[in-house]
Length: 264
View: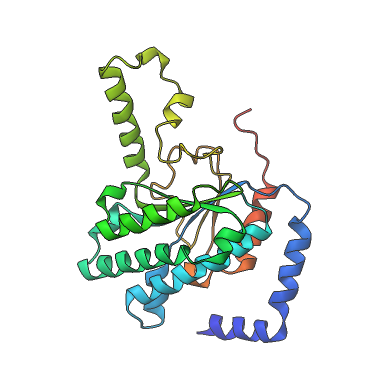
């Protein structure tokens, strides 16, 4: 409560706006990450702290994505990957999962009428074990992907029914089938070839430059297990619905201040 009151006071004083400008001044001329990936965590905690039912937190979190896209476009980020629903999330209470499925489908269908998506030429792709999703959601995903498939300026990946280990297992199975059929020799299997079978194979840049997780938790929880080998990690102590532009700018500043040697 004290934190909320303090933030409200700072907002009234206009300090946040001044801080935003200062952060932008610090990072504007530095190298921006091409690929930002975000674990959208803390929706349920946000709702709990406000004595609301869990899916209202998810709804507020879904609305925050529109603001995030605006901020990323301002930063000229080319690729965005959002962790929206994991394979483990199916183990949550049945009512919550059903509400989540409805909300995600609603959000996907809203993309079809989102002028910003088309004005900024953003291709939208869903990645994960999509066959586990309800048929109506799979249909919505197909419509969105078809309606944006001609764009190449920016790419938005939405990870649904996703798990990093599952992604690697699925890629391995595809390769194993080719080997079994005699279409691929084992000695020809390289890291570069393996990447062609990942969920992110459609991306010109699969590796994430910067991974952000909200809610204060400091783990990746299987997110982009392969693509995160050399990612810069930033853990933000704020629940996703409360994520602000200054949180993104600070994460980018952290990214810029780190020296990326890639093992060299």
